[in-house]
Each structure stands twice: as structure tokens, then as C-alpha cells.
Length: 334
Image (cartoon, rainbow, N blue to C red; front, side, top):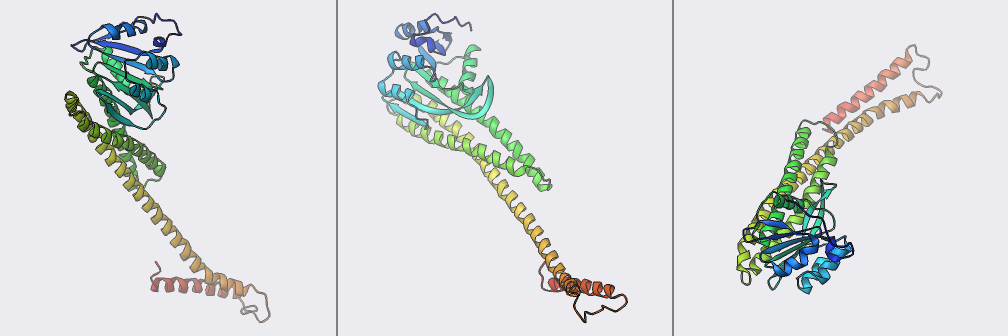
């Protein structure tokens, strides 16, 4: 898809628009240059997707003064609160949803936020940093994928997010497979840190998905009356999120169990070492007492004038240690 250069002066609000598309009734997309966005919104049929950067004050100015949205939707789009939300006001839907960062076109595992406001013929999305799922949908549009309604494009964004979460959960699961194999083979390494990292990643994603599940299920029932055409798409979105949330929750539980198993094995190893140390201490203490007695250099010390006395003293020390070891065995100390 050819994208003409922006014709607006840098100071104009629309000059900061990252991407703007017009979709006809068949869902085919047309790239709109920023200088034509306002005119297209006022004069064309079909629906539009406007993608903005929250870090660009020109985009914020465009939302405040040009976006055909209600005041409450503008307020949510421009708010700095990062808590997830999904609400409906009349026939408008607004939300704050998670996505994964792109850093210099390279995917990361850091979670960001995508804000959106949606009407019957307009979807406005805003982000502070590049987001993976949004960029994937832009690539789909460039490849000719049709989107016949704003809810379809939102579904595409969330679908890509779910796919990425699925890939991430598979990677964490493979990591746990390797860790589990090393644990059962008793291969020592950095398993504790790797398990903790996997549990942290899965737990962080699970919290986001669990919140999304609740938001979409609540919205699913709220749109049934005023916007019945959105009930089925929202139900499909909620089901997708449910499936991936269950998968990542299972991985989180598995990481927790592996962490508990690792902690138990480490505690068992520590106890064995402490037992060995205690037994050695107990067995060596009587010989130490014997050698200490013969090392007092006092008058009438046994074997002082006896040929081979040192060997007798050594035999007594060894016998004391052996008797102590035998006594510990009889007492079932180990």
C-alpha cells in the first residue's frame, strides 16, 4: 500500500497522526494522509481507523479538538491512568488494554497499554510506545486483509495479542520442561532463578488476562441491549481470552509447583549436609576430649613413660570415636 507523505505543517494537530485508514463496505482499506483526515471523516461513508501516539502533543491536540468522539471518550484517551478498563457510554466503547512493546522493530516481553475509543464508524487507538499487536494488524492491512467494522479490527488486535501470549506461554513451558528434566536428573545449575523468572513472567501475564476476561464478560452483557450486533464478536473475544488465560494459569501453577519441588530438594540437601556435619562433630568430639586430656602435660599423665604410649593414646581416641558412632546408630540418630 503506497503511503503519500504528510502535507500538513508540523504545527498542525493532524500532522502527528501515525496512521489513518478508511475502510469501505467490503472492508478494503485506503491509507489517508494526515492533511485529509478531517475532510474524510466529515464526507466519506464507511468507517475509519486513526492511530495516534500519546507521546506526541499534536495527537493529543487532535483528539481534544478534532476527533468526533464524546467528551468522556476523549477524557479516557488522554488520561494518564494505566489501569485496564473497558466501558460503554451510549453507543461508544472505550478501553485501556495491554499489549507487548516493540523496541526498534524487535519484540520484547514488556507490557504496554493501548487506549481506544470506538463508535459505529470510527476506531481511535493511542499508544505511548510501539506495540506489537497493533503493528501486526497494520501489516495485515498493508497485505490486503479486509476489516468491515471497527469491532473486527479490535478483534484482530486482541487476536494478535493472544497469539503472542500463546507463543510466550509455549516458550515458558519449554523452559519449564528443561528445568524439570534437570531437576529429576539432579543436575545443579541456575534452576532456581530460571523458575522464578518463568513464574514472574507467567504471573504478570495471567494478571493482565484475568482482568481482560472480567472486562469483556461484563461488557458482553451490557452491549446485548443497545448494541446487539456487537454481542457475538465480544463473546468470541472473551472466549479467546479465556482459553489463553487458562493456558498461562496452568503454566504459572506448574512453575509454582516446580519452585516448591526445587525448594524441597534444596531443603532436603541442606538437611543431609547438616546431618553429616552433626554426625562428624559428634564422632570427633570424644577423640578430641581424649587428645586434649593427654595433651595437658601434668604430673602422673598416663603412658608418659610407657614405650609406645602415643599409640595407646591414639587407640583410645579411635575407640572413643567408634563407640560414639555405634551409640548414635543404636539411638537411630541417622
